[in-house]
Length: 145
Image 1 (cartoon, helix red, strand yellow):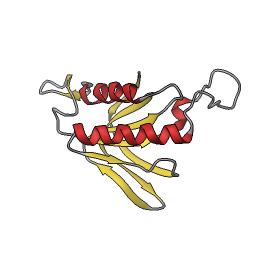
Image 2 (cartoon, rainbow, N blue to C red; image 1 turned 45 degrees about the vertical axis):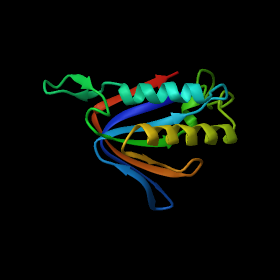
Image 3 (tube, one colour; image 1 turned 180 degrees about the vertical axis):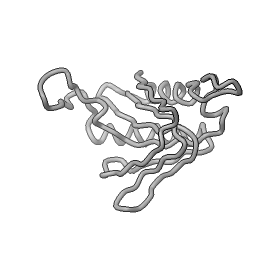
């Protein structure tokens, strides 16, 4: 399971012109699910995201996590994160989860996030989404479990 996380001042996602999720200060998570992923990996990744210290403290050092700054969490499914781009000029998605498994683990990840964090918003799995964000820093990390 892979997550591209971005520290944002604000972010939102729209499907067919309708906003399905929006946050102010927080983390935008682009979530990719591989066919070898399971709920244990989802739990481990969520714990890492919620505890990852990417927000500035009073001295401006990255010492605070999402929960310490009471930030929002916007979770957007992104199957292209699991693409194999090592060869050729076209990505291969052979390591990606089936749509059924991808949706199951995405929904599980979101449910666990809702249970663990006060402010969670989402996109819509499998939809053509338009994501807007103001990356703060910019601060972007790729997390894998």
